[in-house]
Image 1: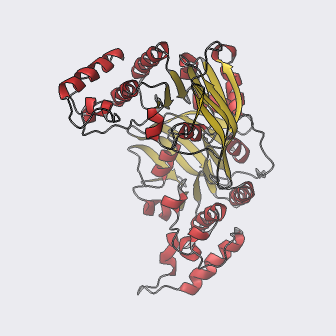
Image 2: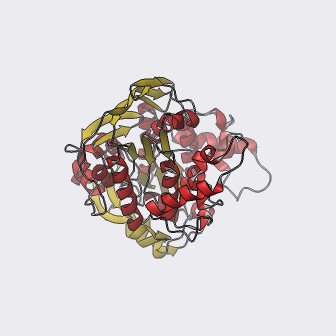
Image 3: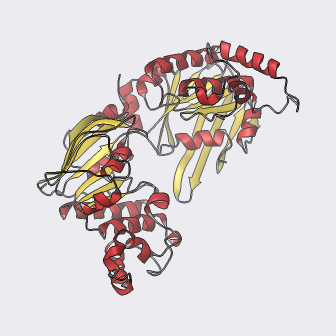
Length: 497
C-alpha cells in the first residue's frame, strides 16, 4: 500500500460543536485496495470524521484530498459524484421501491425515460458480482438487513465508488451474514476500492482490516498494520485516559439490598439480565452503543416493560408496566436524551423541576400551589448550583450543564429510593461534570441506590462500587471496584471471540 498513491487523504481535521471538541487535528490516509478500520470508544470522533468525509458536516480546519486533488464536499450528492459512499448499520433503503430502483436511484445521467429491462439486467449483474441471489424486481421491503446492505453495496458499485465507508455494518447481522458481508468486502478490496470500516467488535476488525486507526477523545492516537498490533494494545489505546481529578467518590458503607433483578429479558433486545443494588451503592453499567444498557433502564422505569424475569424492590416482587408504577415505588430515571425525553425546554425552570411531582402541588379541586412549587424549585436550584437568571427562565436559555442539573433536580424532587442515571454527563463541560459527580456521590452517601449508565468508561470506573459490562443484550461480566480495570471491562464489553 505504501507504494500506491493514496486515494483519500484527510489532513489536520478539526471540528467543534460549541464548547465540545469532536475532532482535533486528525489525519487519515486511505489507499486503493485496502480495508482501513477506525476504532475507538463512543464519542471518540469516528462518526464526526465520516460525516465530514460525506459532506454532512464541514470541518472547522483541515483539508481533504482525493486522488491528489484537494476537494470540498458540501453534501452527500457531491460525495457520491466524487466516488465516496457510505453504508450504515441501519440501511438507507426505500422499502416501497424495487431492488433495481434502489440501486440506481442516485443516478442523474439516465434521462427521464426509464428502460426497465436494461435497468433490471444491469442490477442483476451488479448483484451477481457480490454473489447475491436477489431478484432485482422485488420490493426492498421484503429483504433482510443483510440483503439490504448488499443492495447498498451494489448501489455504491454502480456509482463507481472509490471510497466505501462502512459504519458498524455488522451490528444487526448473524455470524453467517457477517461472513457473507466480509466476502463482499474482500471482493471490493480486490477491485481496488478503499474501504473505511468502523467497528466495535475487535475480532471482526482483526479479521477484515489491513490497517487500524485508533481515535480517542477526538484525537488520532495511532495507525498500525493489523499484523503489528495486538488486541490488548488496541484496548489500552482506546481507553488510555487517566481518571481525572474531577471524578469525586468517597468511601461509605453499602446498606441493605434495595433492587433485585433476575433473568430479565425483552424479546430481541436483551436477555437473562440479573443484578442487585444496595442502599448507597453505585452500580455502573458499561458497554458500547447497542449493548442493551438503556433498554434495561427503560424496563426498570416501565417505559418498555420486560417480557421475562422478575424485579424485587425491598424484597417484594413488583411489576413495572408504566413510569407511574416505577415512581410509586420510588424509582426515577434520568434519560440520556434530555431535550426529547427529559425536559420541556420551552417551559420555566420551576415547571421542569416540579414536572414529575405536580400532583404534590395541586389541591383536590385542581388549584396549583405556585408558592410551594417555587419554594421547592428554589431549594433544588440552590442545592445543585443551577445558574439561571430566574426560576421563570425557559430551560432552553440555560447552558447544557445547567439543563442537565435541572433534569437531575426534577428527579431529586421525587425523593427516589432508586435513581437510574443514563449518560448523566453527556454533552456538558468539565466544570459541570465535576458538579454532577459531586451530586451523585452525595446521593449515594444519603442512601439512594444508583444505577449509573455511561459511555465514558473512566467515569464508570471512578464512580461505581461495582461495574456491569454488557454486550449484545447480555451481561458479560460484573466486576468489583478493585477488579474493574479499563482493560478488563472493555474486553468484556467488546468481546474477544
